[in-house]
Each structure stands twice: as structure tokens, then as C-alpha cells.
Image (tube, rainbow, N blue to C red; front, side, top):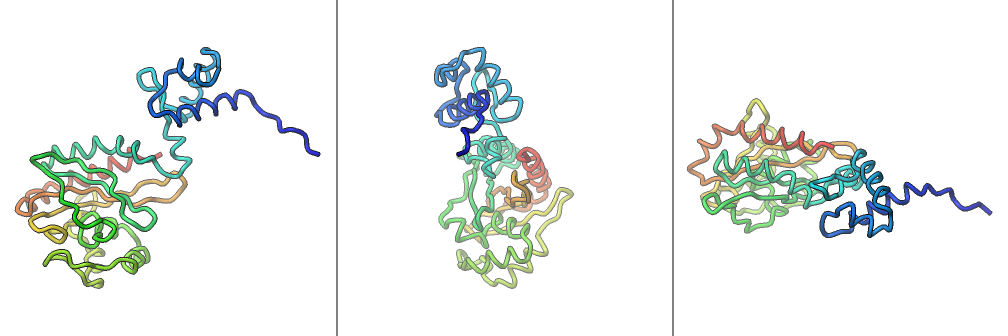
Length: 256
């Protein structure tokens, strides 16, 4: 019969702290964590300092939240934390380009809307058709598809109907693939893809792919976009380098 495993008490205490922080609805102080785990306060401080140093916790104004090292172990950022990190970049795009700003990620073969920043004067597009069914008609979807390899594009198109959403929607697969390979606009920072009234009449969108480092290896694909009234397309396109630079900053910021 095998003997009982050798347990490291300090590791157990540190894991209990992580459990409490991870299961709490709000950030926790060191004193609250000491009470919750039954540890002495000096011991709690030492354990917390170690966990912060290693990236498992983050200390913010005297309270503790989970760090990126924990979320990286799951292979992706939690949605709420991801929105917190992308919101400043989207807000900057909204203010600079005077447009609603969007971020999507390509996860498990589908487009996933992460966040939108808009305002009463620069409202978001009415998402009357789910992105999962309209990627071919949106700059966001086309930017993601343009970043996939040929096999990835054909896989997506084999699983999605190219619905005719407006008189301007491109529904021919071959034409769509040719357009994705060619791109619409090249800036020093990368490619910008455009949809002009293809998803919503009177609205134009510009998007650029975002390459995000996957914590478990490889690269995840997303897209950053802005939407404007169709007549404002050309003036916004002339400033599209702002969009590609924002995508570069986002990729660096989310790298773990």
C-alpha cells in the first residue's frame, strides 16, 4: 500500500487564497482573506506577495484580484477582464475617429462579439442579424476571414449561408474569396477591410485583423472595427492607419 502523499503546507495555503479570490464577487483585502482562510495576517501578506510576484494575483489599491497567469491557464481571458482591457482602446478609437468601435474574436469557428463603445452621437449599428450568420456581410467578419488561411476560410464558408441582407451584400463565394485575398486598403500598419451598406443600409464599416497570442501556443484571430454613416466613409478611410495602429497596440496589450 502506498503511503500518504507528502503535502506542502505553504502551497496548500496559497491555493486556498486563490480559491477565495477566484470565488469572490468582489476584490478582497488581505484582512478579509486572512479571516476567510483562517491564516494569520502576517502569513497571509507573505503568501499574497508571492502570488502577486508570480502573476497569479494582482494588487489594486489594497485589494486583490486574479492575475493574468491564472486566466492564461484556462487558455483565454475571462470575458469581463477582456472587456476591461480592450475598453480604453475602443474608447480611443471612438473619440479619435468619431465612430462606434467594435472588437470580435474568432472562437470555436464562430465570430464572438467582445465589446462595443458608442455614444448617442455615434451610435452602434443595429445588429439585426447575429454575427454568426452575417460574417460575410460585415467588415468585422471579412477582416477575420482575411486573416485565416485558405483552409480556414473555406471551412467557415462551408458552414455558413451567405444570406442576402441588403442589395449590396456579396453572396457569391468565389467573389468573396477573391476579395478577401486582395483586401480593400493597405496601410503601413496592415490591412483594412470595408463593407459599404452590405450589412445595414446607410452604414459603412472599416475593420482590421488582430493577431492575438494564444496563452497555450499558436495565434487567435480577431478584428477591430469602426462604423460610420456611409457618406463619411472616405474621410474615415483616409485615417484608417489609426485603426491599424490600435490593432497593433491591442495585440501587444493582450499578449501574455
